[in-house]
Image (tube, rainbow, N blue to C red):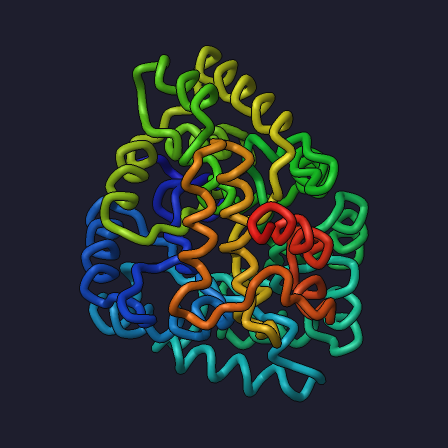
Length: 377
């Protein structure tokens, strides 16, 4: 098992992101999650990541029931986050934090992150003295390490790290498609972390699954390597950079867990040949002009759409239409709507609530107009 040179208590460089857990009937499938957690821990790994907004709070309680109640505390590490919608003043932070400990069934968090920091969210955290309050939890022994997760441009991160040198780690969106993307700036954000000497935790290495089901010409490039899965190349790309603490993967079934473990249990960086192939795939994606939605679902879970529009699913349908040009993509769109009472893209009332919580800063209202134009003709 690879020794983690940044935080010795972390085993390896691969973590279990608990935002996309296995589901059954709208609830976390505990049996499947237990099997996945067992496989993860038996492989010698130990880092779990959650937040209260994940699966409407179910992620935290699933970790309590499937991990914390079944394993000694020294067998796993747990990261949680302070998220903007759940506090409005400094006085709100401690009660929320204490509830998070209760929901997760633990007495402390190994890492506690200021969640989804961008220029606007950071202002609220400053006004409420959230950084100071959360760092106080470390001084009390309620958290072991203090950090942030980040969704904005490099200059904003530079400002935050300059103002808060106490930050120990930065969680960033990092994958081969976003590496040079001007809206995400993964490379530049990563370079800011290097400048400030901050180790990096990677989220969205597979870009919400977008780097698994590739367009045919991109898929063939990776298949010609005669190696791992599409997901494995994406995860190994992110882990191949020297200051990466770990790469998180949001896995929703045992097959994904086993595939990721096969790539990361005995991690080997991408070879020159593999890196060249990944860059070719990236070029194909850039030419497709797809919507860079990662299906985090903040737009519908943390801030319910008043029209019940399942925005990430509709964007996925449009991306599939653009990437694969299959005649049956219209059916995917109809399946999203049928029987669930979900709103059509054309039913958007332009309230903008979704855009305020979107980590990718997408112009969702305009994009929904495009979706309607393709599927509702």
